[in-house]
Image 1 (cartoon, rainbow, N blue to C red):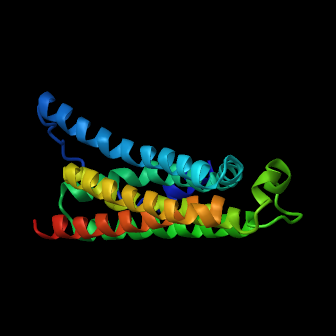
Image 2: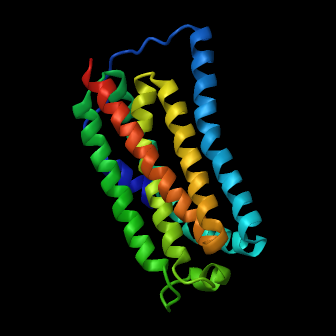
Length: 229
């Protein structure tokens, strides 16, 4: 409810009333296939990264990392409501190939996600009297700083949404698959390199590396796609 309320406040002006003609059914199916691949790549990367930590580290390290992920998950929930109300603006910006419209919407979204993520991270990063998560998920606090890294990673993971949805609106779907595959490979590589020595910390390290690269690649593609029209 809080994230939806914040997202509603962020809405600026009505969406264009012009009717959008849908492409033929065959074209829609082909686009859906590409978007499905783009959506499955990060899910697969998370699974592989978890298996890497369990193998190169230990199952206990993976369990502690998952406990910290549960504590950090409200950051993603917070972003859900914001994404629901800002998604149409991003899609419209992509459809119109408007860098200016994308920039305004993306800055608002990133500021809300970053601000909310920062506040939550400060609240739950360590065990203190005002932190209910410490009592609910005590395993998350066995390793110092793990919750903070997980919350920071969850915040950064939310950032690529803005250029991602804009490229969906611009129908540049193959770019999403290419960027996602490269970012996933880098994330898995970073996790693999860190897991033997850092154990549970390797997962947020890999997530941060993957999300940062994914954001950079999508922003670069969005700038090229939107400004050439």
